[in-house]
Length: 112
Length: 120
Image (cartoon, rainbow over all chains, first blue to last red; front, side, top):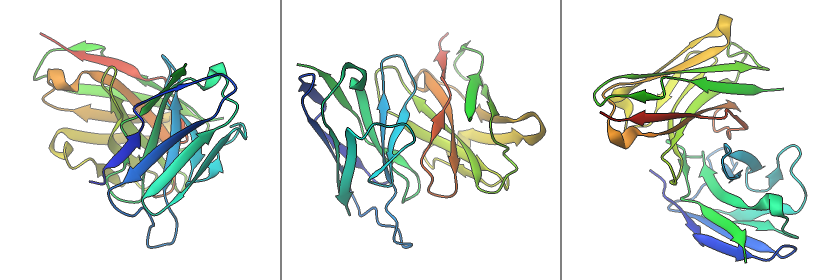
């Protein structure tokens, strides 16, 4: 299975500040069709995960432009600018290039 | 608008089989490309993909659990099902169903989850 390594485990941020989360895969996530199937989710406390970014850098419907994704190959980043209280929770990356799909272990975004 | 909702027994004893139902709306599981997946999350821990069933009744299972998993669907009633045999305390978790479109799809929409506890 592809191992997804997320860092940091915990990320204290100030409201209005910027956060950056890294996700690295144990093998390239570039599919033979040229697409890269790396996605980001936010799980708010007591809720189910919600899709933020799909295929590296595409914001899902309704996701504010404060969220941006980047990266290629095995190295990916989620950036959150102007952090708001509603952004707090656990962030997960997911790869669906290789079978089986696998998630990162999560990053907890919390108030500094 | 896609919505999904899981239902199940809540608590069961070790060695019993778990049966979960995902009731959904906003799409048909007979439409080309549609998929429903099952994902679980032990309390305070990360996410684990379990299985997927697609519009063409193709089924995909996590190799680590494949011998214990069965997915199925009832297209006419907009439901998908997951069965896990030989449940153990390690299977205690919140179980989610989620919708995606196409192979390699992300899980765009998730249900609220159902908590399942395995305890004697």
